[in-house]
Length: 459
Ligand SMILES: Nc1nc2c(ncn2[C@@H]2O[C@H](COP(=O)(O)OP(=O)(O)O)[C@@H](O)[C@H]2O)c(=O)[nH]1
Ligand SMILES: [Mg+2]
Image: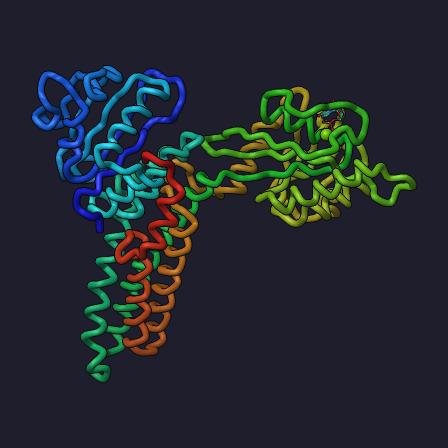
């Protein structure tokens, strides 16, 4: 609960030189508090709600800044509470002064995410929507923004609520029969089982869309492995369409790993160039190079996927096998590079290296096949799902949805096997609890602190 009169204030825009800096405050009595330092044609509390008023922020008799201010009424603001927003001139000083004045009049500085937390506590948005706000703020690509917007608008919440009410209705029906198990016929059991399966399918479909949203939010990390001179750095540059990595024909040029991010079809992909697997068994291994090889292995372990680059114009070498062994730690896409020089490697050759999700012929200098390679990575991450069907979700949400689906599936099995309506009933109530946790019903203070603590101050 929010104590009455607890007015919080924060800068809503980033500190720095900019056109405007927005300071906002929320809580019962915000407009009256703003009246104590705003001087316009009339007190802000007497201006119509949601209408900008021009005036000055006063420190005693001195004007600190000329501002535009607006008040929002309870029930019609971001937080759901009475709120005020003051647009100071950009830069740091005027807004900071305005905040200090607000503090001296009784407001306190907001904690991270406290505005959005209040929107949740006042019931204006549920937890799934609150977390989607963060998705919008952090979006790096188009698809991610679309999926966050969708969750923010409440599409995910609506899906969850529908599942929740089907669960409740069905549970009530099943539980009413528990007291008279002998009266429950086979047909009734299988009709219940059918309805539970339907719920579990709906949950699974929501889950897969949330997985897409989570993948978009996390982005994917891809390590580029292969023997020295296969063309790893060249391919990285071609994928980025910039010369990030140094390319030479001297094997072992890349000694450290290098990260670079790009967006492909709305998804953020971080490419990690690696030093390449040099034959560790050489007579006099270079110590810096050896460290690079160790880092390459660590980079692969830290990645979601791997691209194994082969010089397809030459026969396989021992180092290719070494690189393939390291890459095998992650699902891997094969790049058959140097296609322009003529491909000599056969399918049988590459089969000896292992199993791959896809193989793409590339030629780094001309960019041939590079887009296909990006597509292959995209499909490795998202399968056939369209990124634009995603719904923004967090690990917590995906895991709760997964548990709800498991409970529903198990309940359907229990009913199919006539294992008793009571087992099914309790599994369904467990599923309902997982769904409720997604919407934030009965959320603990610790959970809320963990979620909103990752927001910025002023959001
Ligand atoms: N002809 C041709 N040369 C390539 C291709 N990719 C890379 N190279 C050349 O191969 C050499 C090694 O490339 P580099 O990207 O440094 O390989 P890395 O050691 O795997 O990072 C350089 O001289 C590149 O210009 C390609 O597709 N075709
Ligand atoms: Mg290199």
